Structure formats: structure tokens, C-alpha cells
Image 1 (cartoon, rainbow, N blue to C red):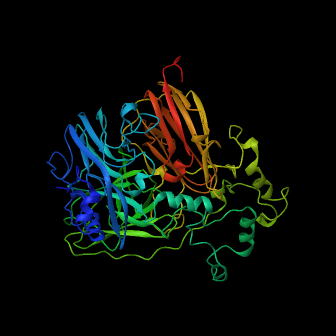
Image 2 (cartoon, one colour):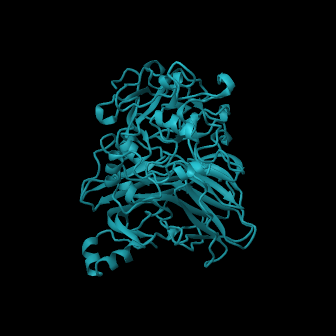
Image 3 (cartoon, rainbow, N blue to C red):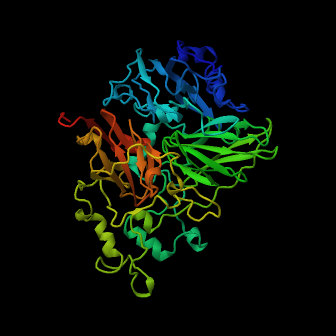
Length: 588
């Protein structure tokens, strides 16, 4: 069982244990499911004493310390562990989760992806007031779904310092996924620098943590853009290496709280089918995930069953979950590699038949460069001009420069509030759901795209949408300003209204050069990929740079719901709105 400290003053205990040495001892407290060498979970209905389950669950949020890679810092822990305890529930049950706050500040828990009454959704200022220091709040709701989900704080930036954990919900009937063993894998990023300090540095200089900018040496070696391309991008005040705000220069990348050197190991028996429930709980990092030499069959995305599809690598956006089945055939270690999309770092975990084995750590792959498509300027099918060359250094009435001027043209998006927080508007955003995601465009193996995902069963609501809503993801990346339609939540942005039961086609248009994992609380939506009644159901979608994504929403959950980018600092600085769902005739 996980070691917990629900009613102990951790500061006093650490002091009694001998200062930093005691803090470091506490920092390596993992819940049973996350310890290295775990045999994993046995699929239901076998008992699982190492997890929290049943109809009454108690959670305590308190201060702690965490260390990895020889660095230690403040953490926010649940029941004394990082990651937090695994909560395992059953579709059809009711659950009461009593959350006690031992911090000196407010806290909260959002049940990410769970369909709950809006008063139980856990977003301070939208669905409830938050949990004040010393208080206990009881969340109570029925379990209406199955699959892989997670929970995290929606208060301040506690999520970035450890306030997150997994949820597994077993189906009421037969699980269509056949496996004899399960491992839960939470990916995360961690810095010993407090997230508020990280944000301050980004506001001082948007590219503060980018240590992979182009250099003269790279130009001479032919690894970077040529001089002409460099000048063109410079003239537009854009950086083709600006892919992640916070990078491996300060982040340690973790699997179940373990860095590469700590080598989290999950056990298997050769030949068995192993289900990996993979959750991206990072604050600011999208990961490219692969198991070299071991194909993965994707069976679930965001907790929803999909038609099995085999792949060698996929990108998992922040807050997404993927369930994959692997079948290791040999009694040898296999590496699980989660590489940051900007290639500034990675974490290696190991699947092995026994403890003591460590899979090889591959070198980081060459860092990617953004291109015209990432600026919303899809060149396919265009008249490229004489010799097929477009010169961005020419005046605005020549070549592509004319299009670049449209990036500030109000007519491209009349609903966007133009100002210092909107640096660009994509002139030609393209549907990129069938595109390989950032950094995986040219790898020589199979890469999953959203277009590969098809729901296992057809959707119940087959009505066509009755209206269309465009929402622009806007920013001034250099000044680190983020918003929807040019308006930050703190600037008094109006709610986005829906009528209960209506069907709406929502178009997300990314006017920035960075992917954004956009999450809607309280609902699943049908990602429009061309699969018709089998379009995949999701609660979070990663919108590629310069691209657009469409989803069809049945607004079936009454209440007020958060809608935001799940990059924590983008949300914190304004890329967030409130969605309201009301009966027709009710006030918004």
C-alpha cells in the first residue's frame, strides 16, 4: 500500500528527520502502481488492493518535496505520493471523493474527461469556489463511462508541481480490449524552478528556454535553414525552432515520477498481451512516444474505444490519453521512449521480464524546424511564381510576401479582436488531422494521425450540425500573450453559449506556430476526420500549428464549463473561456 501522511505537518516531520536528508527520503515515496518493478495491474474483476476504489475515497492534498536527477524542490502531493494514488472505479457505481486541503492556499481537483454534474467538475470560479486551507470538500457523482482518465488541480499551477494522478474505470460489461496485464504510465515534466518563475522568464523573453536556436555552425554544416530562408523568417520576426515554450534546458521528463537514470520498469511475461494506459499529465510538453522494435496497437483514445490500429509511434498531446496493447515476444528489455516534440530531451522507461534489466537509451533525434504550413501558409496547389520560387524578402505586393501581409488582415477573421496580443492570423489554415504531427513528418516508420482513429461503434446522435462556430487560437508569442479570438479570459471575455441538446460544428483555427491541446470540460466531441458515424470521440484535441480542426458537439451537459488550452501557462495567461449550456429561453 502507498505510504500516506494525511494528518501530519510535513514541515515538522522533515525537520525531525534531519532537514534535506529527510526531505529527499520522503521525495521518493511512490504509490504502489507507480513503483519501478511493478507487475502491473490485473484487469478487472480481480481485486486490486494497491489502488483506491469503492464508493468512498479520501484524498489529502499537502506540501511535500520531490527529487529526480539529483535535484529536489517543493511539490504538492496527494496522500503523500507523487504521482498521486491510482483511483479505480466501475461503470455504473456512485462515488464520493472527500478532498482535504492541508496547503496554505486554495486547491481543487478536476476529474479530467469524466462526465459529471458541473458543480462537481472542480474548476474554481466556474463550477465551485475551490477548497480553502483546512477545509474538506466532497465530490459526489455517478460513474457513467469506462476507460483511462486522470485527475489534477485546477488551482494556480499546482498541477506542474505534482498534483496529478490516474483514473481507471472498468466497464460494466465485457471489455473489448483483451489483455492479461496492465501498466499505467503517466508522462510528466518537472523543473526545480517554480512555475511562476518559469512564467516570469517567458514574459521577459518568449524564447528564454530555447537552447536549440539556429547557429552559424548549423548553417555552415547544412543542418539549418539557408541564409536566404533565415533572412525571410527574421523579417517576419518568427523563429522556426520555437516549438516548445519550456524545454529540456530546465525540465526533467518523467514516467511515473522516474527519470531515465531511475529506469522505471514494468514487468511482463513473454508472449502475453500487455495493455499500457498512457496519460500525458505534463504541464507544457507534448511527447512523441515509441517502443523501438515493438509495434503498438492503439485501442483507446481519451478513454473511448477505437477500432484497433497498429503503429510504431504517436504524438500524445498534453491531457490526452492513449491505451495501446503490446505483445513482447522475447525475454528481453524493451525501451519506452517519450521524447519532447522539440527534441530537447526524453525519458526512457523499460518493459522487462525481470528486474535489473535496462533497455538502451537512444540518442536524441535532430530537432525539427517549422515550415510554411506551420504558419498557416499551405503551399500545395499554389502558383509558386517564376521558377517555383517565392521570395519573402520582396515587397508586400510580390510573391508570398503579399500573403504574409494578410496574416494581419482583419478580413481573415472578423470576430478576432486585433491588438498587441494577436501577432498573426493564418491566411490559409489547413485541415491537418491526416498530417503527421510536429517532429514526425519524415521518420521512416509508421506514425499515427487523427485520421487513423475510428470509433469502435457508431455514434448515437447522427443529426447534422445546425450551426457553425469558428474559434481562433491567437497569440503574440514574442510577448507571451495567449487568447481565444484575441480576448483573454481575464479581459472579461463573454461566455461561449450553447443551447441544450443542439448540434454545433466547431472549427478551431490555430493562428500560432505552436500546437495547442484544447480541452472542453463536461463533454465529448466527434473529431471530424472523414470517418462519418465513426469519427473518433475526444475530450482534448491537439491543433497543429497553422492548422484547423473541426469537431461536432452535442451540447448535452447543462451548466458552466471550462474550455481551454491544456498548456498550463497558455491557460494561465488567457487561452481559456467559459462555455455555457442552457435550455432554450434560459438566461446565459
